[in-house]
Image 1 (cartoon, each protein chain N blue to C red):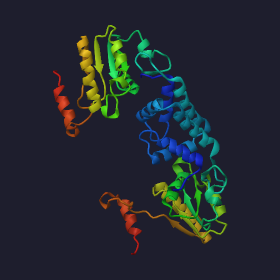
Image 2 (cartoon, chains in turn brown, green):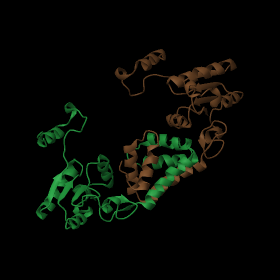
Image 3 (cartoon, helix red, strand yellow):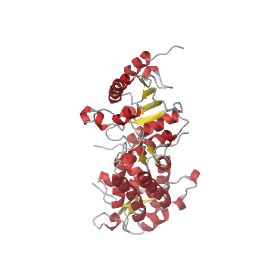
Image 4 (cartoon, chains in turn red, blue):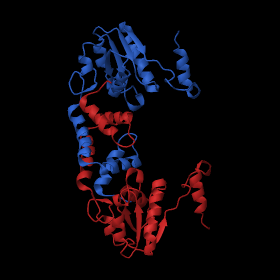
Length: 198
Length: 198
């Protein structure tokens, strides 16, 4: 196979390793970088290095942060009696954007996946249980609405319920702006089960 | 709007500047980087810097290369009587992958686009004309088969024809593996016009 200049091939290879980026996109990105001003390319490279050097995990919730504990765990104006459990730190970003929730978070750093050898010990279950000893009134489970996420939610709810803490699951239903006609069966049945009175 | 750690936001912003990468993809890439081993992230950053430091344009054809002239222009086994004109250096990569062509290249570094103020002076037309003084038998115009690419091809062909050099245009027609039913009108008419005898 034909190869371009070595450093060009290397950058294409590096870009190809990123999720959702195939060979062609990697090529397009590489030639984009080649056309950028040097300082703009350096800024991207620097941002990649920075993020690795500066970002740590919050020792309480495992959010990504430059200061430990993270600004959410430190924020005294937030409701410290509710914990929202998510799979990954980027889920916090998504939820915060919705600007609906004002409690704390807990990142599991994954989901239960027995086939991949990921059991409760591989995730941050123990850390969550320790946090529940504080004055927590509700745990909202916001794992993804797929097989592993649901299984993890069920598992967690069984662990927490005996502690007399309210455990809730984020609603599954039709996405806002979507079309009933195109919704899949499972989403529709969840939407029906989760119906609410006006 | 909620912001994550500063360096995280900065990397998301930098990724968002890349072509075809929106805010959500940038976010996904950033969190991917956060999960990478430090040396893997550094390798990507290094590859970006390297490409800017090492890669230059070939002084003959304007291909991207680490050594000037590029390995295609230096290659004595290639047919030095044919020049294939392309818009951008990445088009060379695509054509070389097809492994059909064994001549030389010439990168225009763009296409004619009067509305964007890009005329013949902004492109590498002059350099091409100078190369045609050598013993060139054919110029294949491989600009993209869109409005600007076609206009550039027509313009070029009018410049070159009086020099008694054969000027050809790459075939436009149905992509291999595609479906006649889904082809657009223009492609179909080009496919008919360009039909060849068995």
